[in-house]
Amino acid sequence: MTSSWIQITPKFQEGLNLINTIEPAKLRLLLNRIASFMQGETSEKASPFTGEEEAKLEKSLGFESKEVALVVDSCSLILQQAAYYAIKPEVLKTKLIDGLKLEQERSGVIVSVWSLNANLILESLRRRSVLPYQLADLSWLLNVETSSKIKSRSKEPVAVLELLLKSNDIGDTVKVKLEMQKAELQNFYQNLEKIQAQLDGLK
Image (cartoon, rainbow, N blue to C red; front, top):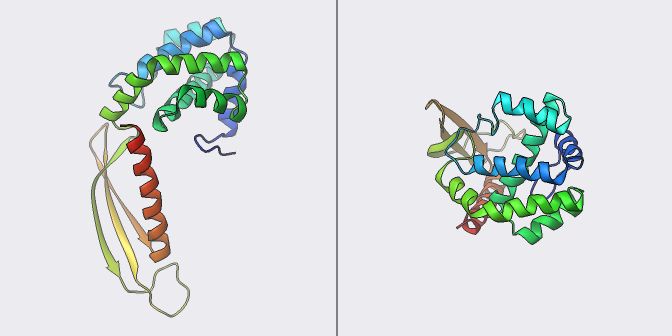
C-alpha cells in the first residue's frame, strides 16, 4: 500500500501496530531521542540508540529486540518523510490518524515532537545527503540505433544518460546508465520537476 507521502509496507505496518501499544510518555521520550539524532551530522548506518540503550528499551517497552528496532525504524521514517515533504503539524496529524491509522493520542505525541524539532531537522537535512550515494556527474548522448526495448525494425532516437554516483561514506563511485525513449525521457523530466517543487518547499 502506498500513501502520497509514505509507503506502507508490511514491516512498516507492523511497526505502526507496535507504536499504537506504546505508552504516550515513553513514545515521546523515544521520539525526542530520534529527533535529536536526526539533527546531528551522523551516518545513515548509525542508530539513535546504543546496544545498551536498546536493551533497556526492550525491558521498558516489553518488546523483543527485533520489535524495538522496528519501532525505531518506523518512527524515524515518519519523521524523515515529514521533513522531506515539509508537512505542517496539523496536516501530519490527519495523515497519521486517517492514513496510517495511528491512535489519536500517539499521533498527537508524534506531531508535538515534530513541531518542536522540525526546523532543526530540516536544517540538518539541507546540510547532508539522506542517501548513501550522491550524484557527482551526469553525461548523456543520443543514440539512433534500435533500442534493446524496441522489437520493431524501425530505428528511433534513444537518449542514454550516464550517472556518476559517489558514496558519502567511503568515497567510491558507481556508474549507472539509463536508456530512454522520448516518452520515457519526458516522464523522467516531469518527475524531476516534481522533485524540484518538493525541494523548493523545504527552503
